[in-house]
Image (cartoon, rainbow, N blue to C red; front, side, top):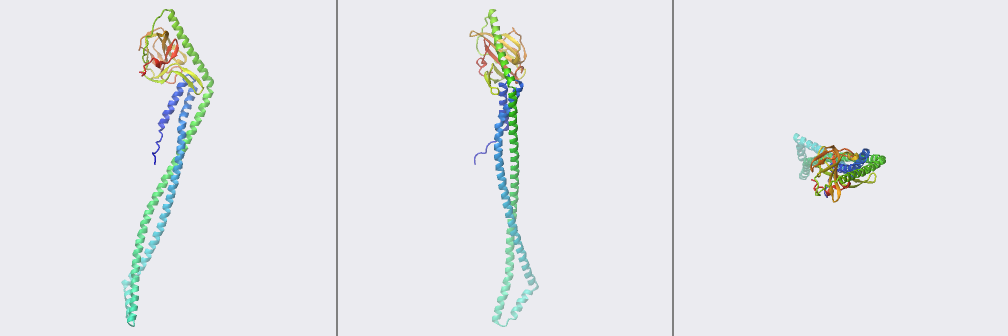
Amino acid sequence: MGPRPVAADPRDDARNAGRAADRAAAVLEDATAVARAAARRLELANAALPAAQHRVATANGVVVAAQAEANTARRKADTARALHQQVVSRYEQAHRRVEQARERVGRVAAASYMGAADFASLNVLVSATGPQDIMDRMGLVEQVMQKRQESVDEMAVARRAARTEQDRAGLTKRNAEDAEREAARALAKARAAQAAAVRARAAVVRLTEMRRQALAVAQSQRAAVLARYRAVRAEELRVVAALQAWERGQARAGSTAVHRGGRLLMPVRGWKSSNFGHRFDPYYRVWQLHAGMDIAAGGGTPIRAAAAGRVMRAGWNGGYGNYTCISHGRLQGRGFSTCYGHQSRIGVRTGEYVRRGEVIGRVGTTGASTGYHLHFETRLSGVPKNPAKYLPSCLC
């Protein structure tokens, strides 16, 4: 026999579905709340459906096997019960033979006790007419005595046979009862397997319906989501233009600040939840730029300036929520800045100078955000670049 397959852990299904839903939420961060909710339900259904379908197939196989086992157990029980009835019938026949033999022996014993048999034998011999007649009559007496012994022997044999059949009846009864119990267990197992299969099929039906409804909702949100994406794109262009205008103003004012390079300070203690780069929205089939790195952290966690510099802007900025940008001077001839989005609270003002590591705000979930995290950007001349190039490789 091969190794028994290991049952899938439902918690793994839930974790996989949760991760898929989180990815969907991240991709649709800039979409409408209704679209995000629909995508989350869709991903939950998509992630859970294969496992649910596998459980249906497995449950169907278990049902077939359990039914076969129940049928086999029922046949064994029927065979054991029939065999028991045969043995009982033989025992009853043997018991009747014992009773019959006991009656015959009883009659012989009664006759012997009363002396009738011995007087009869003596009378037979006394009434003989000669030696040959005596011999013949003695043979008859011996035959009578032999018949008496045969009756006794027959009763003993009948008793042994009855005891043997009684023992067999007891054994076959136990076997039949064991077979009946096994048949009952197999039947209960088959019924439980059938119920599990029904539940598994119902789960697939629910997930399929959930998927259908989510797709319908997502499709109904298409126009609104595409409009949001256009607004996000326009918002990004405005940010680039505003930062470039600020840099031009600094240049006219004669600012010569230079960023010395080197790794930036991690702006918050947390873990990366989303990368920088273009992301494809599979629901609305649109590419969009995720202009920074998302770093998940608890609400209210301090956000620190990644490098020293001057605050270029600090305030509300649409999908970015509470948004701060800090200029760190020129890097390779271009203005280098960092920006911090979705803050619950901004702790600095435009024009203020901040030191490296100074707390400038708190982690939040303002704007187009699906959970507490810092949206962290690095920009050259206002254009977003991958923050991973500037942060410590360990993100610590």
